[in-house]
Image 1 (cartoon, rainbow, N blue to C red):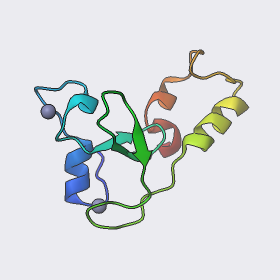
Image 2: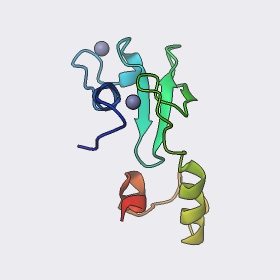
Image 3: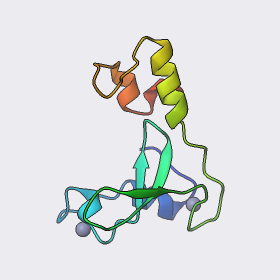
Image 4: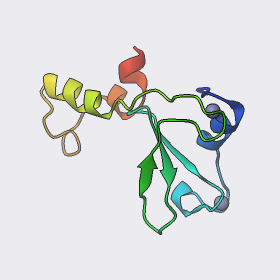
Length: 101
Ligand SMILES: [Zn+2]
Ligand SMILES: [Zn+2]
């Protein structure tokens, strides 16, 4: 399990709710973390899956790593994937593996 800046963040990111398999439906869930982008967001409970990107941890105040979203697209493009949502991209790019390795 990946650890984050503080205990509360780690707990939030790894939270699993029995009642709400989709975390966006869970009122207790505040943070959405996208491993492949290394991106943290605040969940907006509007019935959809909107988030607001955050740069600082709301609990410990530490500066969070910058999102790797752009780098994800750039790296894939360099590999020849110009439309990664439609194309079959390497497995590593579905998780945080692509930048950890
Ligand atoms: Zn924190
Ligand atoms: Zn819940």
